[in-house]
Structures are given as C-alpha cells and as structure tokens.
Amino acid sequence: MHDNKIGVFVATAMSITIVVGAGLLALPGLSFSLAGKLGYLPWILVAILMVPLLYIFSYFAANNPSAGGVVGYIRVALGQRFASMAEMIVLGTFTLGIPAIALIGSQYLRQAAPGVTILQAGLLVVGLAYIAGVVGLKLSGTIQTTIAAFIVIGLSTIALSFLFNAEWLIVQTPLNVEFNQFKGVVSAIPIILFAYTGWEMTAFLAEDMKNPKRDMPISIWASFAIVVLMYVFIAWTVATFADNNDDWKLTPFIQLAKSSLGQFGGVAVGIIAALLVVANVIAAFISASRGIYSAGRDGLLPKIIGSTNKNGQPMIAMTVTWLLFSTIVFVAQEGGVGAESLLQLAGQNFFVLYLLCSIGFAKIHYGINIKFFVSIIAIVSVLTMLTLFSLPGLIYCSILAITGLFFSKKNAT
Image (cartoon, rainbow, N blue to C red; front, side):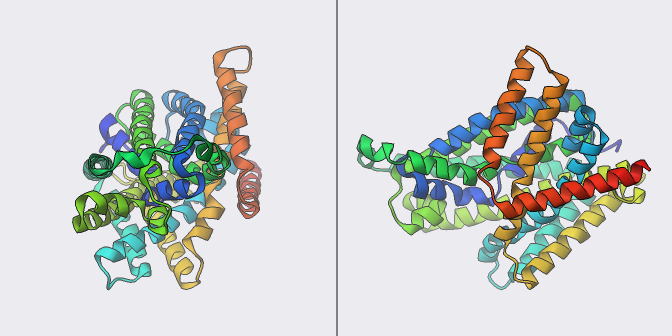
C-alpha cells in the first residue's frame, strides 16, 4: 500500500472514532444506575487500568508497525503459532462485533429515518463503510477527522451547557450514601471496559500511515487523552446531577441536552448519535479489512485476499469484509439473534489479545527493569478483567484459538 497515506492527525481522529461508539450515549447512565453519585469512578479506574496496556501497544507500534496490528506484535514476541491463534481470534471478533455495532447504531439511524428497517439501516451503514474504504483513506480520513472533532466538541458542549444551567445545590450528597456505592463501582467496571476497547484495532492501520514508527504512538496517546477527558467529564456530570429515574439511566444524553437546549437538544443528540454510528463502523471496517488483508498475506486465508490493486488498496480484502459483515447483519437480524448477544461473545476477545501482547512484552523484556514491571501490571490487570466476563464468550474465544492453532500446524506441514 504505497499511496494514500495518512498523517498523525487523521490517525488520531480515526482512533477516536474507532474507540468512541454509540454505546457512550447510554453508558454514563448505566454507570450511574449501578454506582450512583460515584458513577464517574469506574471510568477513571478503567482508564488507569488501560495505561500499561497502551504503553505496550505504543512500544510495539513504534518498533513493529504492520497491517497485522496486534497479530504482528504477538508474532514478534511469541512466535507463529500464537500469532495464528491471535489472528483467528481477531477475525472472529471483527466478524461478530462490527455487525453488532452496526445493528445497535441502526436504532439511532431509524430515529432520523423512521421508514427504514433495522436490517436496511444495518446494511446501509456497512455499505457506507465499504464505500469509504474504496474512495481511499486520504478522503475518508479527512471526513473522519471532521466527524471526530464534531463528536467530541458536540458531546462536551452538551455536558457543559447543562452545567451552566444546572442547580448546583443538588450536588450535596451524604458521605455514607457515597460509601455504599463502592460495590456498584466494581459492578460497573465490566460494562465500562467496552468503552475503552478499540486501540488494538488502530494498530491494523500502521501500513496506511506515512510514518507509523512516529505517528502510531502519538495517535494512541493523543486519542487516549482526549477520550478519557471526555468520558470522565460526561460521566461525572451525569452521576452528579442525574435523578433516580429510567430516563437518566437509559438516555442520559437526551436528559442533559433537553435540560439545557430544550427540544432542539433531542435533535442534536440524534444527529450526533447517527454520526457516531457511521464514523465508528467506517473506522472499524477499514481496520478490520486490513486485518483480513494481513490474514490473507500470512496464509491463514486464501492468498488472493492478501493482494492489493495498482493503487496499493486491499480491494479484495475490503470486498470480502463487506460481504462478511453484510451476511452477519442479515443472518443476525433475520434469525432473531440480538446485537447484545453478538457483543457478549466477541467483546471480551479483545482482552485475550491484550493478555497475549502483555505476555509477549514480558518475554521480550524479562528481567529487573521498568518495562518488565509494566508488563506484569498489565497481565494482572487483564486477568482481573477476564474474571468478570461470561463463560459463553470464553468458550467462543477458545474455539477460535484452537482453530487458529490447527491452521498454523496445517500451514507448517
């Protein structure tokens, strides 16, 4: 992939749009429902847990940039067999996770176009993502940068506008009530974790960057800083001022917006939600197509999928990605499989990839040094996270890993 390279600003914007999904519109309300006035604390705790992992990602990104992303990192650190397992886990995660996001986002899109069905909206979003990939990263990256800026400024402005109109007297809460919320803080952590996944997908864009060795670590840390500041500010605003009713718990942004902007606030949230969905799926689609392209190049998928056209675009990989995602959207919707079920199966796979990266980092830097210490903290953090997840998801991840190991041995013979 020679032309159409992106710089650090576009890479940062794409990282933001990969990480920040439509789930953000509901998650502050869910953390408030579980942790009450301490509903912002899970967001801070998960951000702290992510720091050693992002340090590891930025290290690998600077030293081993490739379209293989985290799979490439694991290959360098742990060898081909673990890389094949990771590659199959990645493919299984993309295949369920991104169509699920498209289906969830379709609920928001239907508010703007009520006559469209969820299936039609889901297929439309995946189709838009394919078109964005075909026109090239330079153009679609510029659009993503604009959308990312609009999303961050728009959501933050809604929260700020609410603060200027809020009655600060209702902030007062007895200390003993707050202490009773700590159990809720722990319960909220697994839900909030999903808001902090996505940087592992940014890694697949390395070969599309002008200077990945320099730009990838900068885009990781810059997007992390922006996202964390926005997340914590919004979560604190909701937790501090929300009333104990379902409207705040389920649609906190609409409550924030309507309180300060009236009926226009609901429209504004609808527009931002639609942009969030489209930008999130486009960025994730492009990253996923690079992962599928890399799997073809590595031999896990047919070699033709790992080829590029005369412009350096992985067109076949993008077409395969589009067909795959469209099929999953269709089968899930027509078969009555909920998007939440797809996410439950796929979501925690990211943390298995985090674990493998952390173990690989520990192997490379084994000894008495700060990098090895960071890797141990990361391993303990991820193992702690994994204990909070579902058994079906762990079984699904194990099946993918075993399949990857089977193909690895088959390719070796």
